[in-house]
Image (tube, rainbow, N blue to C red; front, side, top):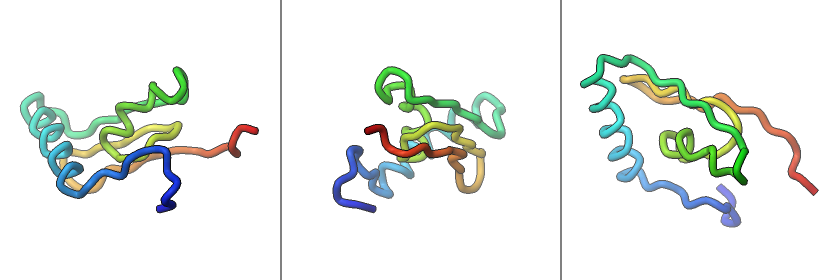
Length: 81
């Protein structure tokens, strides 16, 4: 990833800690998969939930299964000028 990223990159230990905590809550509530929506409203502040699970903040939906790898379904438009 580029060194000029505006967002910190999660360590694997932090990613694993987050995934374990979320999956423990999912298991306790009988949830098999989360679909978390985000958008760029509030100057990117509405992206906190997908960013928390994926480490990537952009428009789209994070699909977070109880087992396996999560996915971020997103689209990109060119940077604002």
